[in-house]
Image (cartoon, rainbow, N blue to C red; front, side, top):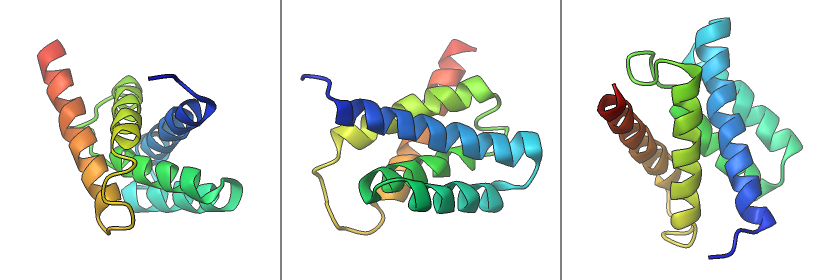
Length: 119
């Protein structure tokens, strides 16, 4: 598979979505819902529709508690995983509700499993 500008844009947006939400949630202390809302609104204002959706979906991973995603670097790992899953499943169930939440939940589970293996 050839890596295109689109692939890099998705990975970049997933990184920003997860890490910004995690940072606002845990470091600034606004909480998961406010952090997710801020990232989602900013993505909707400044990004094209598809990339805004990627960013918003990714921000669900950043809503995780410190028990699940304990550090910024763990959030960065989660962003890579959610980006890869998003790219792999882009054509599956297009327009069906729940895909974003399912993608984020799967990414969080995989990230947590990797963190357990590495610790």
